[in-house]
Image (tube, rainbow, N blue to C red):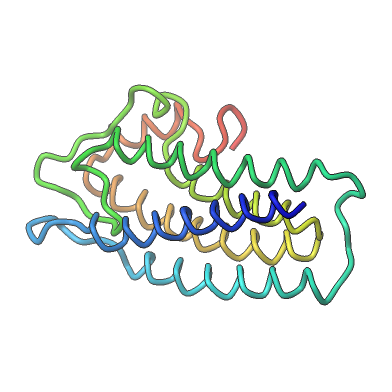
Length: 188
């Protein structure tokens, strides 16, 4: 279990450092039309207490998800896969990825690769580490506290982003929304 905890702490450190890096480096250009409506700030305001409270509840309550160790391993897999795949998605968007909702002059709707199925795969894989963290805690209450408020904050962010995209691209984005799911392929 000691090695598992070391892997967990390293994974959490990489996750947080990558998100801090994105927040500092991948802001929109001054020339981009900003449409964020403070959604990035809301996400950060919700994320930090949710994680802290979720981890604290683990030590204060006992609502185990399972008596087996699979939740620890699955949690680690989800944390690391979420971080890695999110990084790949951010790279695939290149200059069009920003941490704040904004529209560039030459903005286009990306519809290839994973975007054929999902409109917001970066958010899907941003949420995955939260699910992983909750599972790693192996506590139902921790899982709910870590995941639900963060999901609601991301859902608000998606609403803001989709409003900006409909305003910019109109029917083209509406048609794209009809063909794709928001966060989970073929489901939601």
